[in-house]
Length: 375
Image (cartoon, rainbow, N blue to C red):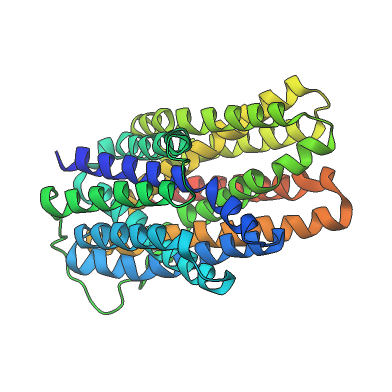
């Protein structure tokens, strides 16, 4: 039952995020914000997410993940309520920072809870299901948001209510899993040596996925794709990313998780290479589907690897490092690749992504060899 509660919380959090994500740039643009200011607002959110993740890991290890889930949901809900009434761009940045803090607590503590309550032989499927329901919620959110377009603020209020009620449900119904291991003052001590593989996988994953979602439209329109075809390509990527977590998680329960990471690296390079070299819409669609399948597999398998390798009293800290790495990649990727595209044009998009994919594959192979050598 606790796992079902986590899935429900994840789904409702995804719905809340999905309702407001397409509206935030529009809200900023309506207030006169420039494109760079919209990008800065997203960067501030990810900075808040990464910073809060470190505190959330400490909290989950010391007191269990339940109260971090509740706190994150309520902070995020408060940020959503405040967004439509932000008085100036500076105030909006503070609210987006608050949003990132709430999401950081929510994600780290949800993922820590899964790792705490699920046995190793079922961890991949559990993490895959967790990723699947969250992605499904994000995909459903914009459709629900359309129903509340009678005022600018109403979708934000609805999303806030969904997330807050889910948080209150967890407060009432969820039994807190608290680790019984020792917790000292240095909960992060020695962790990176154990989990550098999944940590760097999260960094590379975010560098590719968030950069792709941010800049792919510029690449596609450069080659003359109409807006409706650009949207179709996005749907193809999302479909792959939604389907693969559950499949990859289940496969990783039967075979070595590090091998699944290597296979994901091969797919990532194949997808980015096809997208870079393809000249037709059909090949672009195939390449995008391959990239979606690869990206969707990396996140849940990485989380399961953390659960396998980490002492139980450090699971919160380990999950927070994973989330912080994801946040760092989300900040670094779109900005740095955007600078390259400004200098060399839209076609350069997949050159740095290919390099990241190659680095990811090399790291995954090294991690696989190291894990086999230590068994």
